[in-house]
Length: 164
Image 1 (cartoon, rainbow, N blue to C red):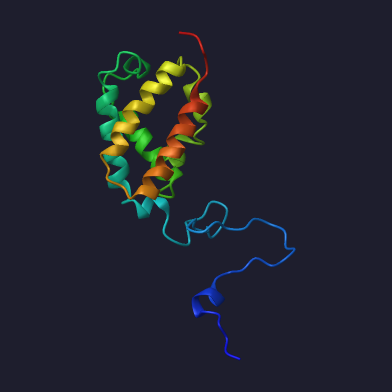
Image 2 (image 1 turned 120 degrees about the vertical axis):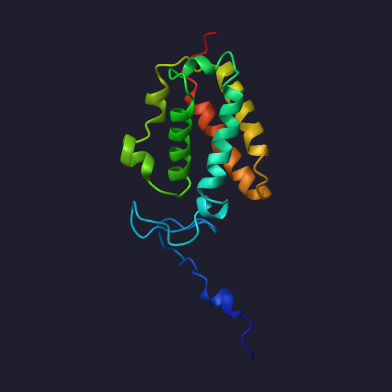
């Protein structure tokens, strides 16, 4: 009787029946340690690295610059520093350099947004500008959906009031 198992299938890690512990989803890179570098290509690398996130953020802030609800939330006259912070955050979140945490500490997104009135209108405006920015990237469908899913969840999590 011949062995019908392909070499690729036999080399893939298989869960042990009855074993406990997390199963690594396909396509999610393992890390060498808790805070270590990814052992395979990260989402950050897969979508084009810093250039992709810098383009996303630049396009996003083009929309924010003229938004009467969002623009007042940025105390700096120049949106450049905010754009750099968002770029560094997204890079780090998606498996790129950890520069954001090195410079600013833990992201603490809810705490950092608490001083601002982030209501559903502000969230929806943020999402509209971010959607327009994502649409300019030309990402493969799965990468686009992965990115958009995170951005939506993050935006909904930042709502801190339902007052107008």
